[in-house]
Length: 311
Image 1 (cartoon, rainbow, N blue to C red):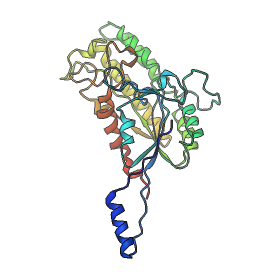
Image 2: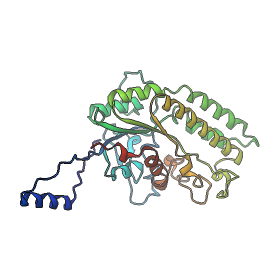
Image 3: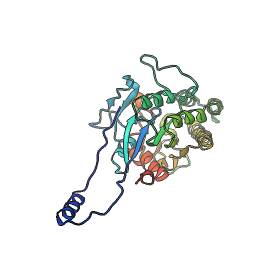
Image 4: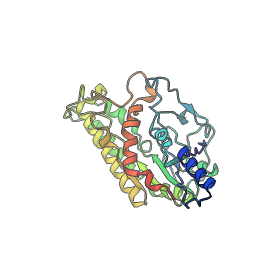
């Protein structure tokens, strides 16, 4: 999907230049500021999957034309749409899809009809559209959660009533094992092959559940799972983030930790920023508040998009 580049020109600037021309004076030379060309890739967390849930009134979202499937539903407000409003950023395309895997960066297979593109396949599509190239200055993505079977781990932990959450611990441990095999380096290399000059920002995942030790807890784990299982699951999220962070940094990408921004807003808190309840397909994903007050400020603070602008 291509986003039009909106040029913003000040009326005062036009007036000043006109006055100089009419007076015969020479206009001072200056370099135009070029906003950074921006592309978004990733899974459901990057696609803003929960920001357009029915709880977000008047925000039905829209289908991405890249792949046409319902998993490529994008909406807002979320971190990507807020980046679109920055004068320093020129969005060139949003290719994120719910269910996307990091997958095998060495695979040359195309996206099957109705299938979900891997991160590398999203990047290839963006390259083919001209969104990813040598002029691209910023690429963001979340990925890795589907590779470790995030949803299945939630299910295993929710079904574990044991006092020490033994089953949940086993599921989380296996997920961390899978995380160690995620080829972040190969994926970053593929993206950089299309966009050699881009800053690549790999975003982390927030902790989902409030725990018994938090003052904001109404019901530990939001009633989804026991307090013990919720604590184990959150620790697993931290471990996943740590693995992804280490791999991303080793590959020359930036890792953006979003967990501090979500403190006090997990499921089970007084002011949760996550979908939970009757909106099954959006459950365990941030609401619009989670994106606009959690992901977005974390991204701006870490990435500093204004510093990527070229004169």
